[in-house]
Amino acid sequence: MEVYRSKGRNVHIYLEDEPIPIGGLRLDVDALHITHANFYHFAEILVVPVQPLQTVNRLLYVVSRDTSVPILCDGALLQPGSYLVRATCPSIVLRVNDEPYINRIIPPSVTLRDDNFRDRLRARDAGCAISGKRNRFAHLGIWAGFVAARVWPLPDSVSPGARRLISDVEPSDRAHGGRMNSPQNGMILDSSVHALFDKNLIGVDPDDGYKVFVFGPDCNSVAGRCLSPSARENGVYGVRNSLLRWQLRQCVFANMRGDGEPLHEFDDTTEGIFSRVVLMQSLDRKVMG
Image (cartoon, rainbow, N blue to C red; front, side, top):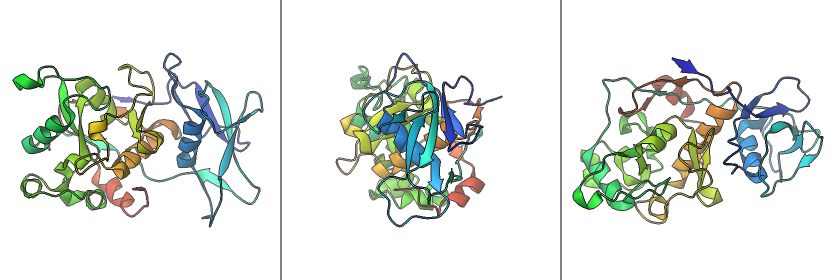
């Protein structure tokens, strides 16, 4: 079963004066956390210039389509409505970014689980790195409801682009699946948070204090939180910022571009893997930050 993410959108995005929206967003009005500055950041992922630019202070600006009032790039909270994205000068022509979205496929016969990877993340995070929920049974060795999640869930053999971003390679990594099983590519998540993170409905921006974004209803009360310090890139074993940036881009493409990417109903107890064809098309693109 497929469900499109455009259902229930209350933010609609238009490019210049085109009559049809190029995308949008579903804000949870009970958990507003996306600021105008965040929206500008997302817009600059969603929209790119037709011709590469040498230098420019700001590529675009945003105007309320409902009131024609400019939206400042500030800390005010984004509200539901329709917004125009315009170039900052007439010589810049904008288009929707066509960078491939890397869709996850979850065949029931595939698992990438690894005990060493899991145990190292448990020792580092001690609970959900996004919700902050501690595992009070950890001292008993009980981790029911917590999952060792990968930011980029692929083995080394099909992840040449991602593995360049991971510097921590111990002998145990080479013996248990390669660099993708480094703690630099993972975190412990509550199982319900993991299900949404795996579908790119939750993302983290390492350039905004590790702020957590929810692209839809905030079912787990994590919108606007910050990633736990244990999982940040503040040492050898923290998640790499470049991988978090990549995953946040995927969230923007999945939820804000066009009608959004379809959500496929799969068993979330198995680890997701990516479509190889789309993956290989994207590896040479400069999306890793």
